[in-house]
Image (tube, rainbow, N blue to C red; front, side, top):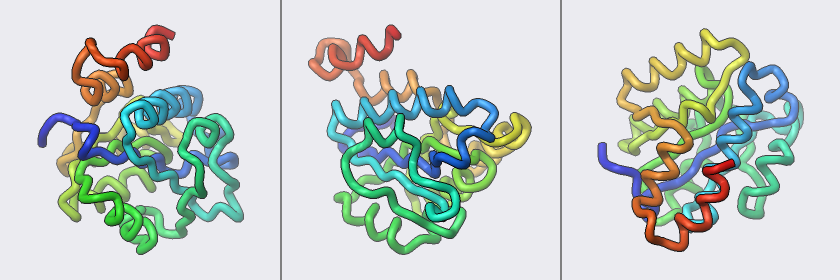
Length: 183
């Protein structure tokens, strides 16, 4: 696995939905850190894919996330793992050969884990933002993280991802992100 590079990366925010998030133990951290990653994606021109799990029943992406994501609909799915959804796979394939996924979302042990395992099967590098994923219980969050890491995913934090993708402190991108990192 190599360092994250903006020209190779795609941010995948999994199922950050209105009816799911209130039950997630660390939902405030998940949302805050996902928003940070999405702001970085905007600054660096990194594509973003938002997904929903059965939107009709579980609601749309929460407003805090939707407000900083690129315009457009999230990809709705009924499969737990995104790679079992042909629309997701097709959309990802149309992004120009990007092979690094930066993954946030819920739930760590279900949709996030199955998405990451699917990514690894398809030869993507999977970078899981550990402080931007959650589950209804801390135990399931931890089990999901351990399973993904054992399978070959890289775990990092939101701040670690930001600095890795920025790469340098002498750029306009760094200057734009610095106020968000200090907050």
